Image 1 (tube, helix red, strand yellow):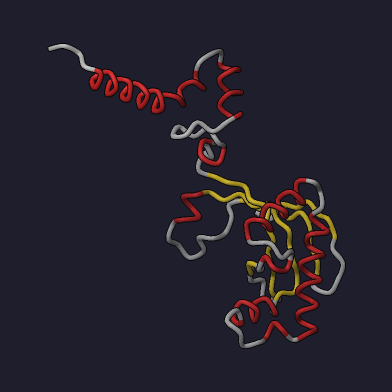
Image 2: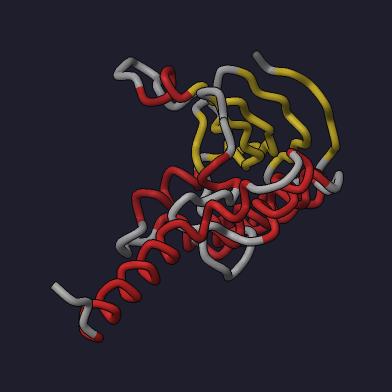
Length: 188
């Protein structure tokens, strides 16, 4: 049976399709140093090399974040609006960057000032949809900027307090209505 032009077009289509599927493998050619550089220079979908997908976290993650403490010692997750107008991910990144750069005291001061201002204005006890969260925030007497280490298995396990970190370092603290101080003390 002779090869027809239609067969050649089909073969060319299959070769092109295979080339598209195998294109990400081009990042794995060369010395290990060249391979690492090429992998992180550009994503190689579907074999993604972005750290968000490819970093081995070894069952743990370290997160800088802000915690409110009540007079009873209860930990309250504070709303991101106390730091900025951006969304939660934008504020989370700004807090993490600030902690890395040594500005933890300024972050604690900003949260504490926002809580104090809302308390003075009486907005924390309102009856809007976020009223329960705001009532809990009204009980906050101290703001801590912490760097917490979470173990995935412990955090996601069903237990009495699954959301507590395995280890935590307080980077700054500020009494609501007071002045922030930079500290470096492990709590666990």
